[in-house]
Image (cartoon, rainbow, N blue to C red; front, top):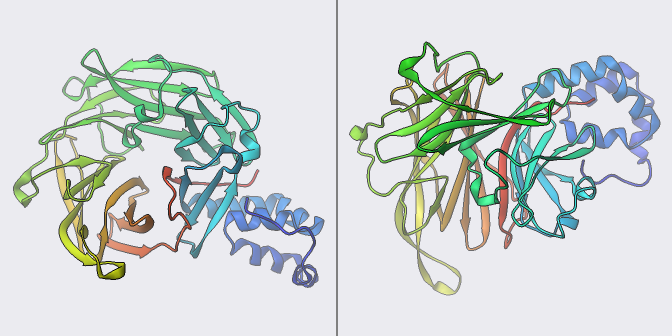
Length: 399
């Protein structure tokens, strides 16, 4: 992860003179990409970081750390993931992956970043129509066989309709889940890396089951959203059940007009809906005119507020939870977002594009304390580039 120097810095030599317990304490205050980089500095650092006690302590801290990963569209030979965490809020980390992808032949095609969980990252190709799993720790890459629906292009994968679930044991095994309508029935498709096979299960209506959609770490996959009703598939992490949920949306709060899911384009849409993990975020905007370079006036949208909704206890309606307004106002021409929930905390990222500049905001809502936090992310150096995937992930770990 990240670039590393070719020689041992002088300050690293001085650090080696400190007691090992103190060095470990210093290292534990760093985030994982920094620790991995230090492991490459010299043998002394590598020995300390490879110590079983240090690995255990580091992984305990890493489990609760949330990362945002962004992949920008560029030549495969320069493939780099950009990583950000609120534990180190002043900069992005660069994770080169071009060498990892060399064993898989994509004919020089740009890839799309689908999802991440723990140390596993999924990428898809549009021309070859394949999905590959990259493990950053074991430094391995493998092709995932085509799903029962056949090879799929990148436009077929919907962020809120899929989920990557890794095993907590650290074995590197994972399940890739997605839901689609097949013959007018919602179907859950699950790939298991242990067996290297797919399994498909037709979801049953929640009224015909005792399955409870809340609690137990259930996975929620969004199938379709109408103006008044959504269709979701809920499943256990072990994928031993699949239930259809049809939560209704009440417009009593005055939310109306044009709606979209996952992406908003300036003058057309004034409310962006972002879904994930049984939650819905509504991003409200208003039209405005701003003066740009050379005194030229242009029409843009201005972000005005964010509402958060969640599934009701029985999964039959969307319930309003909280609102943050008047804090993160900013102009944009296009906007997208992603959202995830873990341990009662909903984390979201809003990505605005204005004149080719990508502006990102990190939002977090603690459901227990009903408290919002937010921060503007530093520049990711993506001006002029197209985004080719964005995802949250938790649990990066050392081997």
